[in-house]
Image 1 (cartoon, rainbow, N blue to C red):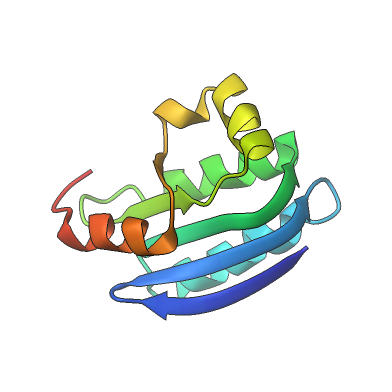
Image 2: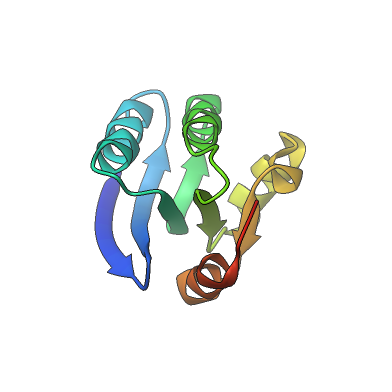
Amino acid sequence: MEITTTKHDTAIVLAVTGRVDAMTAGTLETALNDHIAKGSRKIILDLTGLVYISSGGLRVLLATAKKLHDDSDRFALCGLSHEVQKIMRLAGFTTIFSIYTTAQEASAALKGSPGP
């Protein structure tokens, strides 16, 4: 797994490539927690390059969403492949998370969104 971080408007974008599984979920969690600790309250997870996410990765997503619970906080996902979207749908995550096609679309939505 590889994580690339960029800033897009008012949000931090973490682009994840490869696999988020039992071996790599901790690395993703650390990266997300580091950004939250530094004051990033609008985070977009770009999963365009993600080929697989395990239950450990899903747990990281839920834990991050729980940390970003204030009215002005935002956490969005984008670029889900068919396989990753299927996993998210089966886990019920498509009703929990804001999911967009691209990071630009997610950024525009987060920028203009006043509340959860």
